[in-house]
Length: 157
Image (cartoon, rainbow, N blue to C red):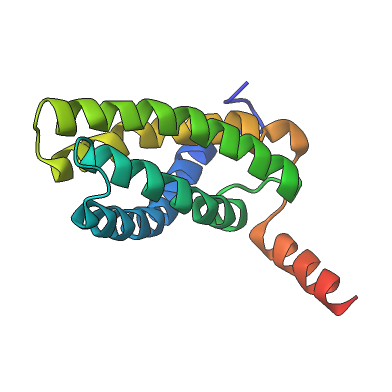
C-alpha cells in the first residue's frame, strides 16, 4: 500500500516534492544532452526521438544515483534498486520515445514543447513506479544521514 499510518499523505507529498527538486537537476542535464544531440541531427527521419532516446538512457543512470541518495529513504540495495529502476525507466523510455516521435517527428509539433510535455507527463508516473517497486516501503527506511554514515564506514574499512 502506498499510503498508510506509517507513511501518510504528508510524507508522500514531501517525498514527491523532494523528487521534483532532485528531478530538476536531472531534467537540466537531460535537456542539455537532448538539445545537443538534437542539434547534431542523429536521424534525418526522427531527429527528436533519436535525441530523446539517447539522452533519456544516459540521464537514467544519473537519476538513479540522485534519487537513491536524496529522494527515497530506502535501504534497498544498490544493485537491486538500479536493476528495478532501469526496468521501469526502460518501459517508460520506450513509451515516451514513441510519444515524442509521434508528436515531434510525425505531427511536426515543436520538439521543445514535446520535450516539456513528455517530461511532465512521465515524471509523476516515474515517481510512483520508483516508490512502489525500486524503493519499496517494505524494505524499511534509512535517513540520508544514516546512509552517509554507512558510506563513510565502508570507505574507512
